[in-house]
Image 1 (cartoon, rainbow, N blue to C red):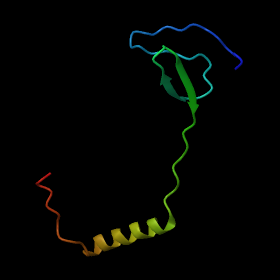
Image 2 (cartoon, one colour):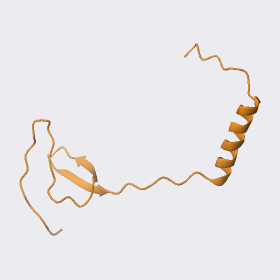
Image 3 (spheres, rainbow, N blue to C red):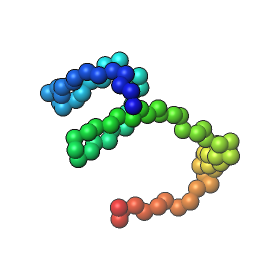
Image 4 (tube, rainbow, N blue to C red):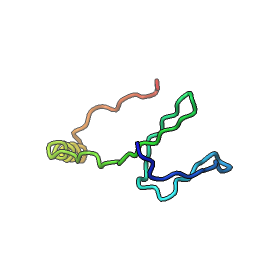
Length: 79
């Protein structure tokens, strides 16, 4: 592996490290027993959108609720 940057860092009062010119906002950290720490960049993605079918079912549930088509109340007192 080729080293592209190398610099020393220190922990601040809250035990944080600042990466200079970080390319990514999120990193996965792996700490090994020998003291090595590996940072792997992570890119968060948007979750898949809600399907059309699910949206239709949600709309139907709201219509049922507004029209009074509901079940008996559920007793949650045990929880």
